Amino acid sequence: MQMHHLTVNCRETATALFKGSHSSFYGTNRISAAKESAVTIACDTISFNQEVDPVFQFDAGAGEIIFDTYSGQLPFDFMSNRYPHRLFNFVTTSGINATKIRIFGIGNAFQRSQMEEMKVVAIDGMPQHSWKNVIEHQYGKDLVFWLKNP
Image 1 (tube, rainbow, N blue to C red):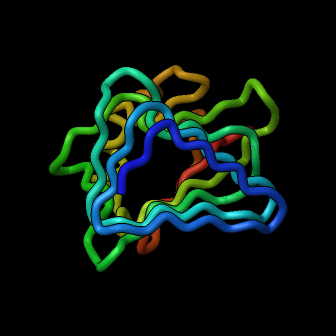
Image 2: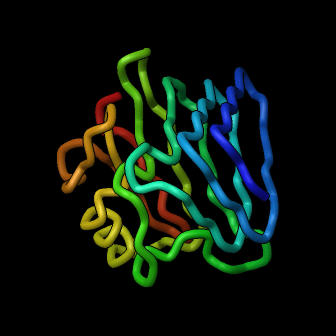
């Protein structure tokens, strides 16, 4: 599945599902999930074509963006693969951004620490090298993270 400059806006309790064994993303893909809505991208491998622009830009909202598996493999492996800076960009200039990001199978501090080191999370385009004061997170089977003070 290839996505070029994708824009997804889910409102209220809407859901969107993009599913395929491999997903390729080109350009900035804008995703917003309001209130109790959810956007799920289910794949076993994911690739990108750029190093400069944010890949996933999360606009104001309070829903959940889920990066899930297609058949059991990790969609992201931050220990083995390199990812672009600002892979996940939270936008706060257009309203409150309480979006939660869930990544399947990343349930440990080692992967999260590697995400910090690679600066894959940004706020308004500024890469975050430390989550301490700006990003909340929780572990379980998956990693869930969101802005500390939306």
